Length: 205
Image (cartoon, rainbow, N blue to C red; front, top):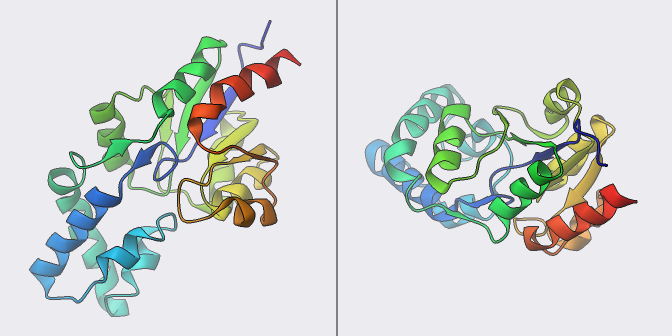
């Protein structure tokens, strides 16, 4: 029987959810309010790193913190409804739980907004931790004993390896399979629709 302590971590943006339309809408509102010139198509083509890093491309250093605060405040009314679940997202989370395990989401996103996404889309993770990026994600993965971490970005691969977890890459975000493999991903799946069968095979071996 699979261990009841099986814990699998998932990234959020472009791993479980396609948030590009919602994030673009939030940036457009922010640009309209502040007068900043923001290339929103460029922004959503490189999702993954912390908000502060992206904002630094569009605002002077002394305005970044305020822009981030305002963006996060605008987010619930602009970004939640346009966001969709990626194919296989709910089933991937449920596959972990069906084996008696726990599914956790570890994301760089502001945690209250990440929680809104999961609730709106009916993705019922057992644990949600926000505000962590790349190697920083290892903090949560180690705390909860996650042995597998699934993500779409090379930063997710680094986070998994920093926690000595298996790095499963899905090329559904800004990084293609070749980039994920070059970063050291242990497994590459085409998307999350392939995850349940892969997990059952792994836990049965």
